[in-house]
Amino acid sequence: MVIFLNGAYVSEDTQISYNDRGIQFGDGVYEVVRVYHGELYTAKEHFERLVRSTKEIAIESPYSVQDYIDICNRLVKENNIDNGTVYIQVTRGDAVRNHAYPKDVKPNVLLYTNIAERPMQDMQQGIKAITTEDFRWLRCDIKSLNLLGNVMNKQKAVEAGAKEAIQIRDGIVTEGSSSNVFIVKDGKIITHPVNHYILNGITRRVIKQIADEAGIPFEEFTYDEKALKNADEVFISSTTQEVMPVVEIDGENINQGKVGPIVKQLQTKFNEQIITIQSEKA
Ligand code: PMP
Image 1 (tube, rainbow, N blue to C red):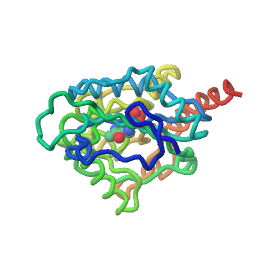
Image 2: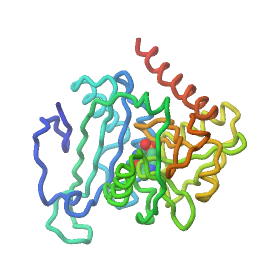
Image 3: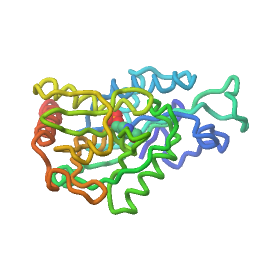
Image 4: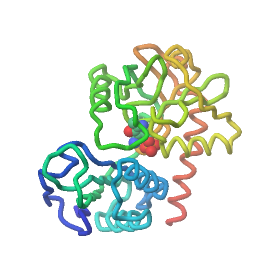
């Protein structure tokens, strides 16, 4: 596999310095872009978010949105990725360990690909989730490399035999450990507003657009754990999980443990977009 590191296309055993600020402090940001049938999906949106994340932590991205897209396309081609992902990490660079931002440091930029099939079975059957305290930092809008809170909460879910941890801060449902969370009540989709408590998910934006086009009300309000558990339907979204139904939370069924009609409608529309990518390529 070929990876991209700081301007060069190199082999995957290439090394980075122990002084990298990403290693020393988690001082960097990242993105994940989905590849369907060899084509990048919503890449522009992902790289605009990456550039925003770098700005928020005062890293000057050495590449533009279009540069990142070009690098991804070359990696996808060279690594022969049909369905997969591209991970992009930008750290502040190499410097002797000292908390404050070092002067004259050059960011490290790493891109690599993975093969990843769509989670078809889970999307058809739905997944189990748990609720857990959201004890992460207060800049969840930045896609930081520092994922310790998310990692700890995901581990709790896995240990409980579930696939996602739905996080709750001060009684309010924020987001999943690696996803946005939505409820459906009386035909309306409700999700946490975009602010510093959540990541502004790219899939969330696609879902909003699909809902708008389909005439399904999409409301951005906070809601609590009771509303979550009393919802008609619950689902999560992410670049790799797409529109993923949640049919059980903390051992309690949602919609009698079945995937509900609004989720199915969103999944159908989401699929149509992917099929369009496939047919445009053919
Ligand atoms: N929130 C968190 C904490 C995430 O890790 C992710 C997945 N990257 C999301 C939301 C969903 O974002 P996206 O749809 O852009 O993948």
